[in-house]
Length: 179
Ligand SMILES: CC(C)(COP(=O)(O)OP(=O)(O)OC[C@H]1O[C@@H](n2cnc3c(N)ncnc32)[C@H](O)[C@@H]1OP(=O)(O)O)[C@@H](O)C(=O)NCCC(=O)NCCS
Image 1 (cartoon, helix red, strand yellow):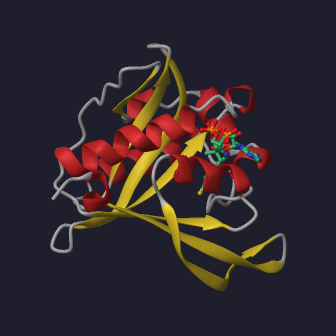
Image 2 (image 1 turned 180 degrees about the horizontal axis):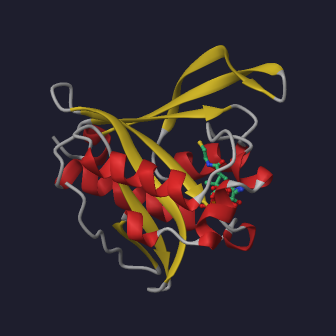
């Protein structure tokens, strides 16, 4: 299911393997700014991240890619999870690790590439993403890649000790002219 996904621009996706884990990559996951709106908890280590990737790659309902910028730098990851083949839907999550790579359109392009792959190669029909309401950058990246808010899940998560809404964002293959 996981194969390289090339784009026409500077961003491409490549399968993420346990052997790709470096100290720098683990450091992104432990950076409070990068993880604040994610479900990452506890201190990550090379061993814990390698195990997570190996489990994801062994699963039938998940897949994960490295986000590559300018043909060489591994700047983040994008994942499909909760793939329900019988319903042709899956959930997308993304993380751009280093702050100097934020705001350059990388997430938008990575979501676009994965969305097109989901329609054309995986035959999916619906992609969803759950985004904590204060995560303005993530909402905007998903919107620019074609997602729209389908529902507001009230008090669906706890952020810094307070309940927080989650935006349920969705895109459909038919909106892109696909079956
Ligand atoms: C949220 C995240 C994925 C955005 O990635 P990115 O590559 O910076 O996003 P893009 O450059 O494609 O930006 C998309 C849009 O959002 C805007 N944006 C990005 N970050 C923003 C922020 N913190 N505040 C306001 N707008 C922001 C950009 O300006 C752009 O909009 P524009 O073209 O209208 O100017 C990235 O910051 C990240 O990985 N953060 C940590 C992990 C995380 O929160 N993941 C998402 C969990 S759902």
